[in-house]
Image 1: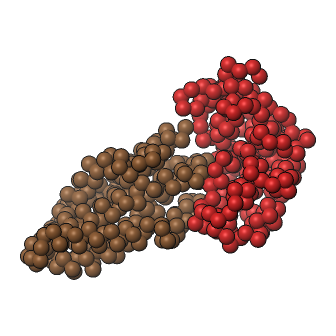
Image 2 (image 1 turned 180 degrees about the vertical axis):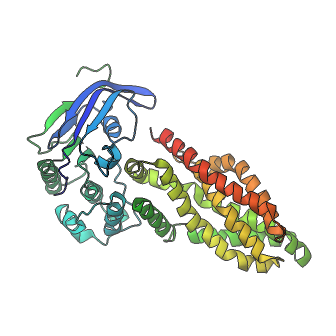
Length: 213
Length: 216
């Protein structure tokens, strides 16, 4: 697999996150080094998605600092845009495009050299190649959405409920793919309520403001 | 840059698919023109005089049809976050989306214009086409600002039209002026070009700021 041996280190110090103008969490200190997986736990509304979006560079932290250390990419210091991929609740697949067309678009978007055929095999998507994404079931769509993390070849994976609506076989495969990504020097930060088979992963518990951790 | 090319070609391909809206825009353009003709009546002298205003108004209305979906369709399926997360220069993304809108929603209108102009008995088709070619990028670019401001809203198209309608007014004024003044120095065409170039600078900046605000 293809995380690239970038040796990225992601550091968050005293980060606070806001949603809709309300601060939902504060004081998050988190350091994740290359090869590590972190599972974000916490009740609904604890700010797991908000933290992932901040780490992805999609939202600004209300307080605190974020740092990315790692090798320069094309002479530039690493940024979330060049090192991270965020898989949110929505799968970002275009319903009118087939599974193959969606994967090929992402490959061009991220400019990677990923093998789409391998990725389809890993995520049991090979038989669905020519199906428009709109006709996929919820679990199949989720697998297609997750394929974007592999296609992107970014070292930092920010996954929000990656195994939602997946069957046991697919969920186990997702855990295997995350393990392989970390073994290749990548970082995975996974927000989930479901059990996920990542024995080496560190658990990071988030508590909403006013709630005991 | 290849990422931007991928976004443009995806957007254009989606627009020309069934339900994508590119063909509907051109049909709507023809329909608006026809309704004007039916309303004005069969007087060749009058029709040829109002050909440029009618076609400019029709093109403007037809371009409005698809503007509200420029960012909203991507916002609803999660693609917009993917594009924004991937793009370090959000201004380029706005430019790519506006260009894709122009190529898929406005170019079909330009292709239909000569036919409709002949139907109206317009005197000069070339100045009319030149004015649309030079002025129409401003429609997509200014529209991109409105689309970026309104994409999270359910009835975005109504607010979008109210927001950018006044900004479209000078484009139509210069556009009709350029289409009617047959080539002699043609300052309206230069004003039109200036408006397009101005919106080429302003729209990416304003659109990117609006997307950042709406997504954070």
